[in-house]
Amino acid sequence: MSEMIASCPFCGGAGLYTSIDNNGFYIGCASDPGVDDEVCGARGPVRGSEAAAIAAWNRRPVPSLAKEDAHG
Image (tube, rainbow, N blue to C red; front, side):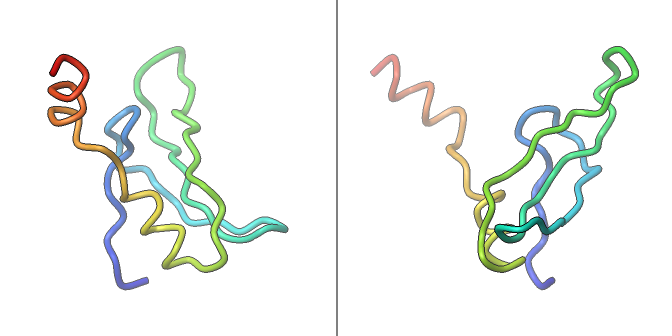
């Protein structure tokens, strides 16, 4: 794994893992956001390789730009 995995876009946590299922690789979040003793549970899209799954997880809109575009 050469690319760093970005923090979770939902909870901001760093408790991330790479996993594989029947369809390919994905990134998931097991961080505890402090709500009802449960883990975040966010999961990225399934991709054909670990590197592609990390790239898909890391690719997300920049909130400030998205907000500016919405209020234009």
